[in-house]
Image (cartoon, rainbow, N blue to C red; front, side):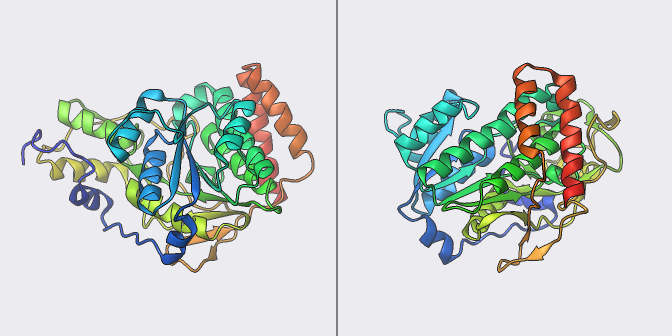
Length: 360
């Protein structure tokens, strides 16, 4: 195969080769029963995870509403699902989750029964530079949504989280861990809350595979942070399928963790990809670990207890109560982020995540 013969990197055979295994997700009857005919709101619907959620939920018979602040990608998503792309029906919702009043209005208009919250800032090095932006989207945005869900009587609310929330060392991990805590703190009433945590997704927009594809096909050296760096990987289809399965079990703010198999060395992924497209093994440029980056990720924090579930590829862990002073600290965090005081945001994020570990 020539280097330019196959540009569809989401091809199933290529994904299986890169992952070193075959992704398998079969939706059970409980997922069909839970979703069929229900009003389901997907936040971040124009992103890679959100758009795949929208497609799978639509296929399961849900009445899906697509919320995002990216109008162009909303148009592309609508076109891919129903073929018209006219943007003239109520299923397309243009909104920013940072705007609490707008979020509340959306929930009153749509009256969703189930919410999948996939909207997030996710690029680790960017959030290290702009931590206030991470707080405003990943933490405050999540609280705006959970509050609106509680007030309007949503049945289930599922946060899409990340393995970087386990023992976080980065702004991304810290803000997503706090988002999990926010979700857990709203549990106990009518709405069933849960978070679902997984690692890197092959083929998602802006993922390592996007960068790798560009670098290998253009013949430039491939940048890797460390020769031993490794990550957990899933396909988009697989990750979203398991998120939906986990949402069936949502109850009182617990975190579900997807079985992602064995971690894969990034340097091995480069070799597999080059072999798959018939390219020579590229030159590799080792650039060093970036601020907040780990050599290896874990799916659970050291203080978290791994528990089995009825699904053989989904675990769970209880979120401990955030402890005294959490509400005060998070209000302070929002204020600092609103002032774009990045240095103080860094310091407070570090203290808050340390306290969460001590409270466990």
